[in-house]
Amino acid sequence: MNLVESPLDPCDALSRVTVPAGEPWLGELRRGQTLRIVDLEGNQAADTLFYNLDNPRGERYSAVDTVREQGNAYLSTGSCLRSTAGRPMLTITADTCGRHDTLGGACAAESNQVRYALDKKPMHNCRDNFLIALAESDYGLGKRDIGPNINFFMNVPLTPEGGLSFQDGLSGPGKYVEMRAEMDVLVLLSNCPQLNNPCSDYNPTPLEMIVWK
Image (tube, rainbow, N blue to C red):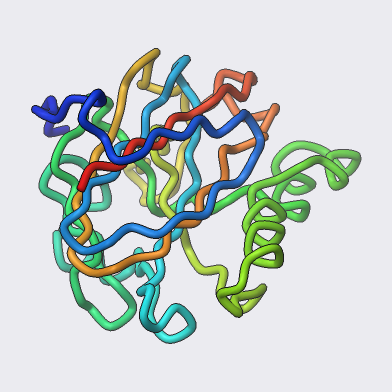
């Protein structure tokens, strides 16, 4: 973990938006702008994807390139989020939580069945949130453009055997992660509706998105 507080004041922000529990958010971030995602009540998971705004179908966030280049599976202050072309998309500039997962993926109808129970298939999930937000937009993106995502605030430590372990969240009310855009990016976020995961304390809660110039 590399916990660093931000010097930026929300009173000087360009925009502030509250994303209700279980809802998606889609927004543009220009090169040099800073985005802060705030875990307003704690232990919420912010499933997030990034796309090159100039070429959203051709270049997007790559978990593989990000983990390989930094030599670390965990994201925190100083992490460079890389694209499928290996280019820097965003840099994490502040982090008061210290644990963000980029390996576990987003919840889906199928994974809900496997992880929890067959009757969980109809439950609201992040993959559906992504698809709904894209379908209602004009970016021309769809199902094939959904790749591995980041789960900000989600605690998924690696086991000694190399597996994943979904654990209680380490975040708390007001914790945040902040990142500077290194290119113009499209941000696609699902404020996770998951009711069965201890990472979210079985209680989805709102997030805040704050953008500075």
